[in-house]
Amino acid sequence: MFNSKKIESLENKVNSLQEKVYALLNEQLSEVTYNQDSLRTMLEVVLKETVKNNETLAYILKNMQRQDKLSFTQIEEPTNEMPEEKKNNTNLYTRFVSVKIPNDVMEYLLEKSRSGKKSPAIKRVFNRNGKLVLCPISMDVVDKIHTTHTAKNPTIPISYERYTIAISDEMYDLFSKIAKMVNLKLIEVVSSFVYSSSTLEYGRIKEAYNAVTNQNI
Image (tube, rainbow, N blue to C red):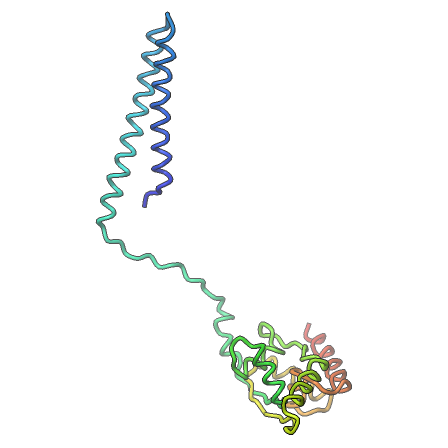
């Protein structure tokens, strides 16, 4: 397909050459004496170049008109192939763990989640690019969540729900090692990766998490 900018450039070149011819004629004719042979040679070169560019421009325009009448096969946009490892990420989450968290905390996570689904909203807290991270909701934020809930529902106590989450074998092994080190149930450890209401428990889990991850480096 021809570029309109190329056509415009050719047109400008042709016009420029023609202007040079006229300017040269005016300049030379105004002089009393001039070298006729030199002028004739120069004019021939300029005129040949002008004709050549005019023919090129005409050829381009003619072919563009033909292309308008042709039917082209649509060229598909190149697809961004994902690495094989990322393609199979969904197959990596074959293990399941339970999490027990307050309903008001769950509502908070859903508000922050783009998907609006419970399991992804919970998992995004400790799953960063397929890696296990210890970055639960801070206790100050949890206290504010509970305070807001109590203010809105003074007669309704804070209730808890269990949720099942799919994780990878690597995450499951890390959770299991940490649970064994701190002598807690797996559900308690996983829940602490989402939120924690005990500074002591969080400190023990953090220490175990650092020890396990340093071993895997």
